[in-house]
Length: 338
Image (cartoon, rainbow, N blue to C red; front, side, top):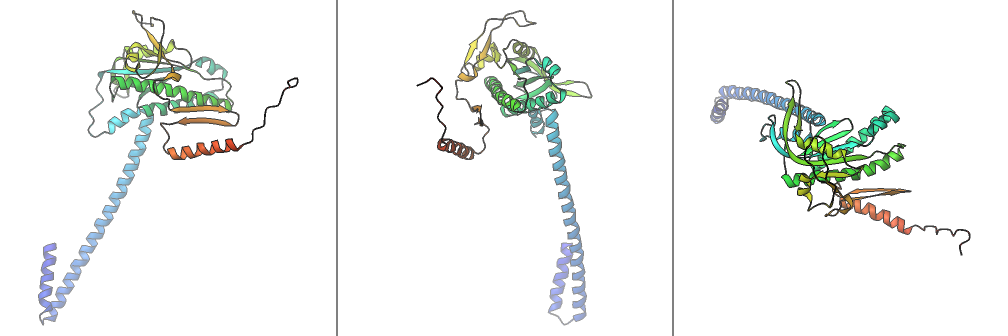
């Protein structure tokens, strides 16, 4: 096409310098017709490009919606792994060293008997939502909700290393305890009289991890003694406390203050084991949470989650300034006191 157009242009240039007006007019008409055809072709290409661009936008929107929906049913760590272009298949099963977290609500059966189903459902939605956010922030794989229990593991499909996986699991559990304290305050203000307390257990060991199920439905999960041990440890834990097994303790003892418990024999195991309680208020590193509440105030600061530190500082400074300017009434003397 371009060669023909160039030839017409050359012929037209030659005719311009000649006296043959008829040929010049015919060449000009041919060039104009060629230009019009190419313009129509260009318009069709532009329309086709715009249509493809719109299809691409709609496809990306559908993929984003699919990913968001998928992450509600499949652990986020698994979704991220599936989306990675250079990621190996995770359909196969493999033996991995995991740190497993298991938690359970104390007295949940009694709560189901004393609370209305709608109230209990709202409470569980609050609880599971906050615990899921904490899990995702620490990079854990949320295996499943088992009634009121939560099963999470670190070390698959991605691992930060044995020690870091264990530290993340303990850090996540401690943050969950902080979140629960805040949630209890919220629930009391919402009129929920019944307190919610949680036991937590963590174990480190080997398990088989991968997709288990039928040919029609699969579930990415972990199976092995480490999972069972975490559940057994949780059962021995006091409410609102965190117990860890010896394998986890060896990985986190330099980062968290722990207190050794008496030697126990876990159900289903022949050999006794040592357990350790993690003391959340005596961490070897500075805590990242500031919490407190009272008449007229409720404070919860998560330093790890603050996106605009200056804005948070300005807000806190303004609160301090107003409190310092306020004239607090002096306490009255009781009758009989001098």
